[in-house]
Image (cartoon, rainbow, N blue to C red):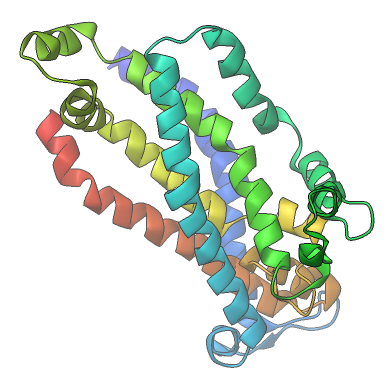
Length: 291
């Protein structure tokens, strides 16, 4: 009983802080979403009409939802496999292992605002590095205003978003691989297993909890992505590169539609929550088999 009380004393401050800065704002956002409110005047109750508008009468938000799924798909299909392969190479021991491990992680610790400004210079139509390289190799016909076109603007934000956090997942995968006992690999080598077979039969199954954690971080990070898109395109041109967070921000602080913007905030929370719960269900059986 004394130990339980000690644990409660140490956990309680964290629970209170989490409740104040996460739980209460979520409920407050849901409450405000039930009203039409400009942030200054009286609040007019409208029920679920803001949610109805969001799903049926707002094509720009539909585009934002689609973009968030595209970003999530790029993270799952491109970002995580690359991170896993590089982590596997590092974990197997390469020359300058610590150096590469540090270099891969540098983009993660740099502010997303700085990353956005860096890639703005790369995609700039007049002096951008990408157009300069294309012209230098004789492909000037491919040079274009990448961030000013509806067909390419969002893709230009996906590239740095995927690139920036590869290093984060490399370190997570790397730590998980280093935590696998070497005895398993030695037994597999004695049985004649090659590197591909050991990866499929030992590394991936034992990495299941780590892979699940990376999937959750990747999906929720994609669904609530904001800073890079805001810095590089601010959702433009013509809302073609909007994601739910930038659309929410524009409605809250640009159009002063606090009720509608709060409804979009609730949607983002639910989107992340549903993705997390689905992954928990998918990995429930594999994790049970490990224990």
